[in-house]
Image (cartoon, rainbow, N blue to C red):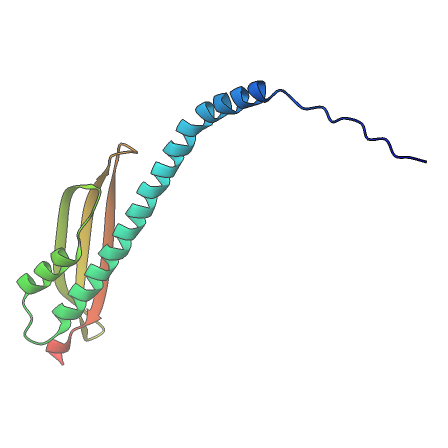
Length: 136
């Protein structure tokens, strides 16, 4: 028995393309906004990692014999370079503490960032503690 092929129904191309353009026009601004917000959040996470590194390096430098607090502060500020954000202030403090007869250097770095796309300010704080070699 011979096989008979039925002709396929072709949808109208014009109406399909028009609905695709309208759908893209409705969804595109939302996708762009979500992508930009994700980039801002990733940027804040990168800044937090940079701040943690700055605090650790400053604490390590502060724990060395003969180090000054000005050198420690400068080290923390040199590490921290926010890009793409407006800085609304930075504070770096160092102190020497003693716990159970062991002396430590504690560095606290605090950074305030203005995130333009979210219209918010974020305060990032990192502390690091290192054994004070100057007291050994």
